[in-house]
Length: 610
Image (cartoon, rainbow, N blue to C red; front, side, top):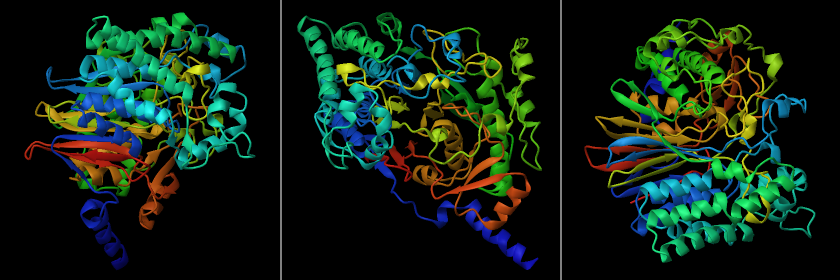
């Protein structure tokens, strides 16, 4: 009895007030004028260079996007971009939808005729249309202040040769055999052709001549338009047209088809960036914003709606009860994601109003088993909460959470955590930008002499309507992606900006980051480093879309008695030394008029502030 009492005393110190008892691996970034944070030190430097030129947070974010897209190991120029922007002039949060679409011929029947369970994970048939170049140029044209030439300058310098990092080298080495099948990728990724190991060495100058020329063509289009009397915005859109309708597009299409892909000129011409209204929920007076159902962002809002009536602080940070309720709530929200989320620009219409209803959240929370894990969580029915009848209840009756159907052990570096990067930027004028770009990671099919690596996002579609009738492939349609920037306002002004990489773990980690600050009084750096949990009882968005009911990731330092409690509640435990995910974030101190930046110690994330 005395031992148990002592354990509970220690638990109260470690779990309820964790951050006051330990130091963070990285310091908080304090800035008055601006903050620039992203997944790579060179990328953060590119953002700082734009601030030094007098640019705003949008300019800086675009430069960071270009720089990280040039570094390859987490994304490339043919990937996709999704962003939230706080515009201080309109005093509102805007969404940027620059996710590529399925090309001509990419239908359910096309893939099922090849006896595929899901679209391919790699290769030219995994590619959606490039989104990042268009997203960058639209954000810059509409909300930035600098020229495309200014913003692309760091990217061009890097394409001309930058010292490649270990993570990219390892990825190239891992996939070298597959890369050999794609001629344009081989010439870029495997420069040491005279060696047995053709991959670049860490610190070797990684030269991308074709990409540098493509970026120069964009600047040339902008320059010609300016010389013809066009405005700054019109000149940037001239560069946009050259990429999606001109000679760059022609080479992307020619080379993609040469390598077995489906992309056409019409696919690139008809694709567009949407500037859209994000979705929002109010959590205890804090407005939390996410992009809508074409990404997984609403799951965080659904989870917050379920958690809002609960006394999380009284449960204690990372106690058995807190871990259990987080796991159950996340599973409920993700089951809805897996069935109901898809491209809102295509029918059928997703029931987003019902999904984000507080009443629906309360009904879902009432199903929680507080004694043990429920391995059979299925999607709910949000339609009555928006006054409609659900047309797909017959599919939910077929829903399966059978682990044997979807696969076995998920490793911490598996597709479940498929990496990307994240970008945070803010300035004294009030502009705030949160971006989660991705796609075109190693190994990507490079589109001919453009140097542009193509996205692999087709694999996030499903082919069986019983799995998700909203997320079936059609030409021109966006797959439901994992990418999920976040932003929160308090008293009508920015309070938090946050994002993370990591596939299906993203909104799990961001939910806990948010609660760390709001419920457990952590500062932004403490919150990005704090130990999280991850549930694997969600269907992966990559590869074979596996699911592992009851499997949970915990931090190595979780005490033995909590481990024992969770095992007795039918959890299968896994452990990691870092479980926060590489979160990047900015917190706004309105009292002092300053910004606090956080960059996780999980990966290479890095920030600069002034």
